[in-house]
Amino acid sequence: MSEDIPQFTVGALTRAYVDGELTPHTVVEEVIDRIGSDDHNAWITIFAKSELFERADELANITNIDLEQKPLYGVPYAIKDNIDAAEESTTAACPEYAYTPETNATVVDRIESAGAILIGKTNLDQFATGLVGTRSPYGACHNAIDPEYISGGSSSGSAVAVADSQVAFTLGTDTGGSGRVPPSFNGIIGQKPTRGALSNNGVVPACRTLDCVSVFANTCRDALLVEQVAAGYDPADEYSRQAVDEQSLGLQEATDSLTIGIPSQNQLEFFGDSEASTLFEDTRELVTSVANEALTVDISSLLECSNLLFDGPWVAERLIPTRDVRTKHSEALVPVLEEILEGAETLSAVDVFEAQYHRKQLKKEVETLFETINALIVPTTGTIYTIDEINQKPIERNSNLGLYTNFVNLLDLAATTVPVGRRENGLPFGVTIIGEAFSDGMLAGIGDALCQELNVTVGAAEYEYTELKNPTI
Image (cartoon, rainbow, N blue to C red; front, side):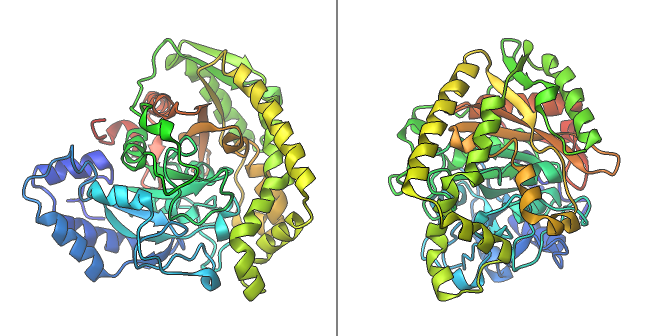
C-alpha cells in the first residue's frame, strides 16, 4: 500500500485531486496493486486495465474539478455482480445465468456521472440468497479481518473490497440483511436506504417487492453521499418512489432532541456469543451521549416479522428470477439454494394473502413503536461463524444471522449499520440503527456520532474513525 496515496475515503481522495496531489491514473494503478491475487475471493470480474485507464484519461482531461458537479471525482468503487454495467457480464454468481447488458443500471449511471471509477464486480451468495458469503461457485468469500470466518452475505465481496481498502465504496443489495450483515462482519459502514429511494432498474431481483440497492463505505458520511448521488425517482423501476425527490436525504446531525429505542436484554439472542452481548450492552450505555434519551422498548413485533421472510411466502419470489436457469440447467444452483427453492414451490396463494395480513398487523404495531422513538438500535447479528461452522449447518446458522435484519424491508424501514467494537480475536461487532422510511439522513447522523464517540476502528487496516476524512455534505 503506497504511502503517497491517502486513505480510501471520498473526502481524502477528492481533496487530493483538487489539490493536485493525485491523478486518476495513480489511483487505478494503486487499486490494481491492492487487489493483487484476490485471496479473499471478493471479486468475480475485474475490468481490463485498458478500460480503467480509458476512464482515468477521461477524468484527467477535466481541467477544473468541480466537486459540486462531480462529488465522486476519481473515486474507485465496485458493484455487486447482480447489478448491471454496460458491456460487462452480470452473473448473479451463476455462470449459466450470465448475460451481457447493453446499458448500465440506473444507479451506476448516476454514480458514473458523479465522476467515480468502476473497477469491477464483486462476489455474492448466488442470486443474492444468503447472509453468509459462502454460496458462490466463484468460491466462498473470506472475512477481511480473519479469513477463517465468513464475510457475511449476500453482498460479500462488496464488503470485503471496502474493508480491505481496495476501493473507497461499493454497491450491494439488501432484501433481508445483505447490505447490513457483511459490513458488520468486516468492520465498515452499511447504508440500507429507504426501499425505492434507489432504482432497481438493471438489478437482478431476489424479491422484487423488497429489494434495495445498498452502499458500503468507511464512513457514514461517505455512504450517505453515495446514496444521495444514486437516489431519485426512476420511471423504469415500477417500485421506485416519487416521494424520494420530495424528501431530504441530507445528513442530520445527532442532537439531544432524539429518543432512541433499545431492546431489553431479555429479548435479545446472541447464540452463546458472550462478547457480542457485552459489546451491545456497552453501546447501550453510550446512547445518551449522542441523543437525549435511551428508551427500553419491546421488539417482539419486529422479531415475529423476521420469521416471515424465509418461513413465509416471500421466499417464493426467489423462484421467479431463477426459474429459467433451473429449467435449462438442473445443476446450475448451489445445493443449499436449490433446497430453499424446492421448499418454496409448495407455497400457495392462500399462504401469500395470510402472510400479507399478518405483516399489515405487525406494521401497525411497529408504527405505534415509532411514535415514541426516533430510531431503534439493535445488534446487526447476534454472532458470527467460521466458514466451517456455516458448512456444517448452512440453513440453520444462516437463519440465526437474520434475526435482527429480516424484518426491515418487510416493514418499509431504513437502516444504517456501524461498527461499535471488536472481540478479543479482532472480529468486529456492529449495531444497526433503524428508522422509518425516509429517515436515512438521520440514521447516518446517529451512526456517525456513535462512531465518533467510540472512535471505532474501521476495516482490516483498523483506521481510527476520527482520523478518516469526510466529504462536505
